[in-house]
Amino acid sequence: MSGPQHAAGASRIGVAFDKARADGRAVLVGCMPAGFPTVEGSIAAMKTMVDAGVDVIEVEIPYSDPVMDGPVIQRASDMALAGGVRTRDTLRIIEAVAATGAQVVTMTYWNPIERYGVDAFARDLAAAGGTGLITPDLIPEEAEEWLAASDAYGLDRTFLVAPSSTDERLAMTVGHCRGFVYATALMGVTGARAEVSQAAPVLVSRLRQVTDLPVGVGLGVGTGAQAAAVAGYADAVIVGSALIRCLLDEPDFPTALAA
Image (cartoon, rainbow, N blue to C red; front, side, top):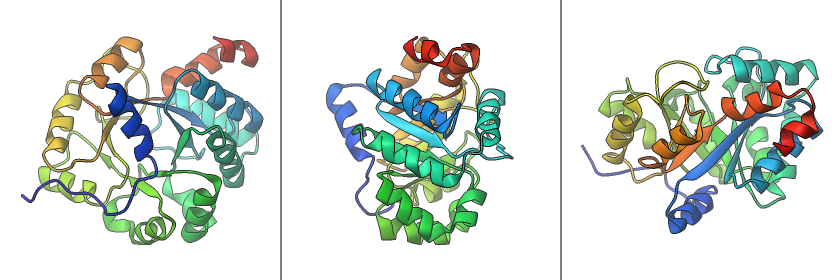
């Protein structure tokens, strides 16, 4: 197998990894659906996360059939959709959070992007200050239009790899990534677990053999101890459900933010 590889071009999100590396720590990625509990409420929540030290905000475009999302994120996304949030609202949220100086990446299922128009979305995402996309249901073999658009507008692209991925599949996938690689800690959906899968460090080790891109680990990271463990072998710790649950469990939104 050839040496480490990844898509050519400068990474927008790379500044967050460079800073964390200089500090001797992993990047903390905090995830939140756009429009949860409202558009303005999600902007406030994300800005609070930035103030609390989150390095990268992952803004998820709510979708009616989120195959990778567990019950917590699904509930939050359903609330956002019920409130009428649209993809244009997501772009406004990204712009507001990026204006703080934070790195903002977008997680989205592919259908909303196809409806918006791939090139148009890439253009508007770049204009809003977004760094790129995490695409859980898009594989590189079917991503020709996105690969071209992300190159045209200088956006990062993060595809997912799983513990079940073959070495050949890992190499092919990371070869199309720019920014970082998303390693799923387990087979399944998002949501905090009692412990992080032991497959995660093995997968990260395998990725190190085929890419020099930073590796982020998500799915199942719910406690400080789990995050610290993942930070010991990954370049980024991705946390979503645990943060969202804080807002779902606290009926008074300002109180939840203060916590």
